[in-house]
Image 1 (spheres, one colour):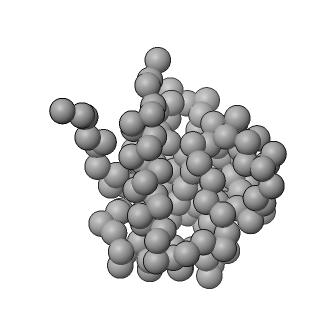
Image 2: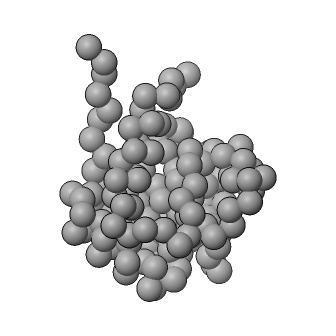
Length: 137
């Protein structure tokens, strides 16, 4: 009997582009039961991380105030975020860039443009993969 992944419920999501943020919000509200904590930039995401306990963090890489890489590094330094999976969203999809993002601590990268219809399934698959392949310690 295998161990099931805990449910993915709360996602802290940071994206500065209002159109993309709206698409993700509408999609995930319509195609999943996720609770989104929506931030319009990296600075807000760091502040909201203090007030919430997300199951997963979804970050845009390119944001003007504080970029996703800076947020990723900041959260990974915190004890309470050591076992919170962080996923990046970006249009930068060269293999070496994706490898670099993963080396910094991202568990996966969602490529823009993404398919809104499959986004919830994609996040769930990433979550399940994280919990099956992840061994803390």
